Amino acid sequence: MKILTWNVERIKKFKNQNLANVINSYDADILVLTETSSKLDFSEKYKNSSTEKLVPNHDGVNYESEENRTTIWTKYEIVKEHKTFDNFTSICTEIKTEFGILNVYATIIGIFGGKGERFKSDLSGQLEDFKNFEVKNFNCIVGDLNVFFSGYAYPSHQARNLLNETFQNLKMKNLTSEIENNVDHIVLSEKFLANRKIEIQTWNLDKKLSDHIGICITIN
Image 1 (cartoon, one colour):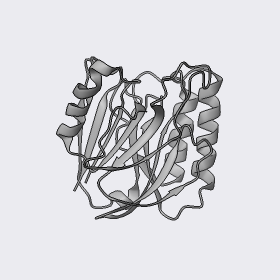
Image 2 (cartoon, helix red, strand yellow):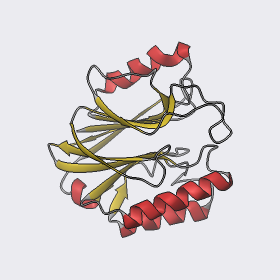
Image 3 (tube, one colour):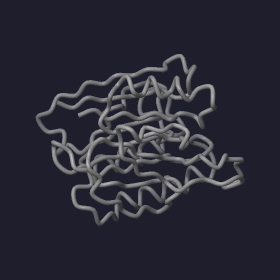
Image 4 (cartoon, rainbow, N blue to C red):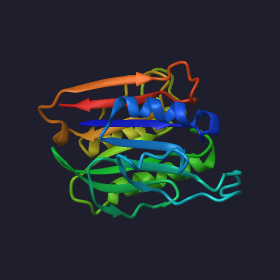
């Protein structure tokens, strides 16, 4: 199984094909794209589940009509979707895989990086989602968390500690925590990962296609 995540930085037309080519080259089973758009379309090979489309001036940002914050693309069967605190920001989709059910909570925390009141309110709302989810086998968090888990404590030690404590309480492991200067993460339950081997690949380290590192994990 391969899970890929990338913030594609509100794609521009000239980047569409380049982004798609890179993403397709990893042939992942699950894609979680943030700051994305319907212009980036993988429907020939994947089913999808997306947050609500954004409109101009939503949250004071001049969005284009095709944009949305988070999309899950998957080759697997989508069983159902679960309600989140903000359907413009986060989605939780139940996916049937060869390793069992994966409840993927895909998200972006904050809209202007890890700063400001919006980051704080998103973090608070999503922590409540994680705490109160009436979802059996809640076992996967993926997306742009806007937090470094190694090196400089961006945006703060408090944000890092809150998420680390949450993952620990949920018995989840952040597989991408050691990637420096990285805010995009893949977190899976220890139970789901038991006795499995993990390989991590990264790209776009020069930040030319997006201002975010792309990540793909392989689980065997």
